[in-house]
Length: 298
Image (cartoon, rainbow, N blue to C red):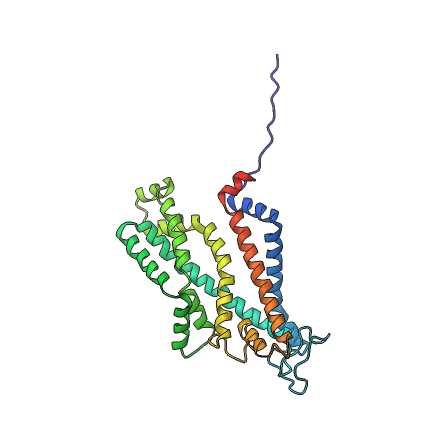
């Protein structure tokens, strides 16, 4: 009697990030939003150079031509000084996107370090650090940013990076702290602690890498918030100063002329709306893709 060996199919290994990527692709709204955002980002960073080579610089004035509605040469029309609005929207979106991205990075770094230290230390240190966060939460967020920008003589991009980033880290700190509180009791952290691994190595090598999922999700959702706040500051005249445009300054200029030159307000507003919608849909999709509960449902 011969025994027939049965061959079992080989199951290919997977990972959290590969599973998240598969779930993200199934979410059509988030996937298409990611494609739209990447396209707009490439357009903002490459388009101004192409337009300049074609003779449409963002600061090139043609006062004799003046403000005209959209044409084949000027897709978004021209403003009061005869400047091409399409080129200015691309440059302004690039400035706003850069400020929002760097401010979100600053916010994520500060919040991650602060929250991980508070969660790992625990006890009185954790209590003291989180009460400090509660105090900052009680203060008006935008009011602090406006004060910081106002007392600074140089109202440029660097000031906005610092002002928005160093005040917007509070929620990130709370998210990371909550994750670290649950992770620090896990076996791999206890094993590292038992063999004498320093606390800072445990935090940066074991705890923070295991909280990257929620950090990435909130980071994606923070970028549109930072862009909106930069636009608000520029709308008030506290952000990017002329002649360099941002979406906020363009919308402010368009609001002053909206009755006569409607295109100065409509096109920058639409471009900003599409960018923010795509980022928000992408952030929601990443949140669902990185949620461990979604793995059980799929």
